Image (cartoon, rainbow, N blue to C red):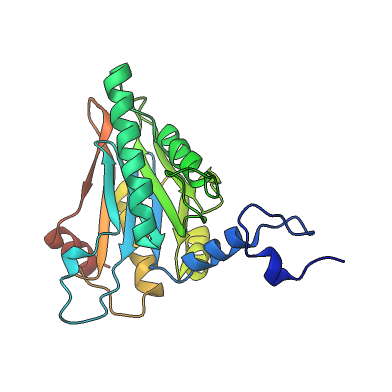
Length: 245
């Protein structure tokens, strides 16, 4: 007789008779409780926008970091257990710097994502560096490579990563993804991509959208400069964009 589901979902290294690893599925479900994050890739660059959940008026909004820089030309947004994401982000930063030091070139966005994916897949291994469970976080990695290509990649707790033109993760991801599928087109400019990100967040957020409760990061192709340069938008810039919506 097969064991019950509750007995199969205790171990991270055990497949159920249906071919499922329940702990990975539960980790993917945990992301649906996290803040909504949206990414849009255009020919001119990539945009990331994330909701900040401010649960108390005493909380300092700037202390909530949902978009971080991995290298000069790469940034990422995360949703889920942020403590888990710090391990993955630190690993990505070390890999990017090691690559630059060894080969004197910037690491590609996909290679950085692959190195993070390898760490995400190492759960359940019996050594000190590995987690005893899957990482409960999904990551949107965005950047512009040295060849001038802008890239947006999504990675989930299973370690699977895929390229997207536009992608939403987190609590409002279903509605946000439906809107992106309707409104996104490959020929849009970066400014149009930023407006699309903000419009999507405006629709799915429970609180009224403002420069305090969202973060926006962009990686833009500069004239004669490869790879692109990633940076976070200032509060005044976000206010200006929101007033134009």
